[in-house]
Length: 249
Length: 249
DNA sequence: ACAAATTTGTTCGTATGTATG
DNA sequence: ACATACATACGAACAAATTTG
Image (cartoon, rainbow over the protein chains, first blue to last red):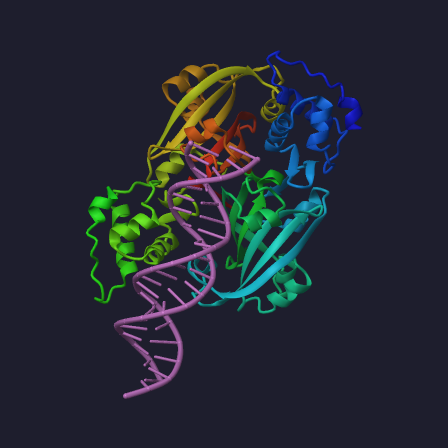
């Protein structure tokens, strides 16, 4: 294991390479060599500081580096883990969460966290091209890949078009399936706006990421075959685990 | 400053126009008049409530109005700021910084901050489809809109194909112009990968944004008419000022 | 690592004027 | 004339986030 292969405790000091860099490089080598598989837990900071004969701060600095580069993920009170590989999320007209994840040989899942009915207003009403005051269902959905949360999306659905949305989503947390149950076999994504932001405490918790890591923020409009908007989603992706990919043919 | 021009503390009360509306209107006038430039910080709620002689709640109600209309952005623990206009950055095959900004009736500019020659390696070599060790020019370019920095890009250019890149960029910091000078009239963007990250201190400084605000991180590959990669750029966008837009026709 | 200061966010309660039926 | 609802405005206290030392 790690302790055995890296206990050669003596790191060269004062030779121009900071200790934390050397430690980060060693840990990285272990990870890329596959000795530590994705999701595996690293030794505690205390254990590492003992093994390398350095202060815990030095270990933390190395971890920070690795976390910053997305190789490990540190969770307060739990430990440090080898980062899962990044989910690629193509943004094409036929963007489907489930299909896309399956295509990457991963296991998609989802959960509806909250649903509430509101009146359409402002920007959402405008994007959906409906009048203000029309009833909307707003579903908060957590999308997961290999059981790890990746995306938190607010889905705005016009209830006059999808009257059974609430019940259907209750039973099956797939937006696509809900559309299909309403007779909508095909839809496409028309526009996606992307920016980045810091998560709220709740968002960070749900996405299982630190408060200090950013989220990708997207606003997307889905349309039916006739070009009529059917859904507006505002989604937050754990940036450390997601890469949006735009291919232009 | 603000205090002087708006201290006429006495707002007409009981004349049919709510205090918070009057305050919102005044603040709006200051903003649209350009006395408060984009990104500038407004006085604190306490200061404003003192200046106008009203309760803090009344100020907050006015702020809420302005924030709702997107004129200001309020951040807990930090203050209220005049909203910067967001640059829309379409990610299509013909993505050109200069043209795009001009199309939004804004003034684009750019500056080459650093250039250095390196040997192609790892991922960059792979994306450019050249052998490792081939000479590359890496140009660090700061893209600005209306004189505000927006994007910081590392442009990786194969020197065997663009031997005069360095001199040309020195004279004119436009990548497109440099391509044209080498006889490349048209090129297109093939793929863009997008994620988000926190900036380093240097990046934050150059982008004139706080270290606690995220950047959009993109990796893009540009190709010539024959589909051969000609440039790989790794760019960081000030997320608060940028929206990447993907339209799918 | 910790504490202090600053600033916005939230939640009580109170009071007043206006429109409605 | 009265009751009710609603928006406006003020006050106090506390919570939460950020910055600074």
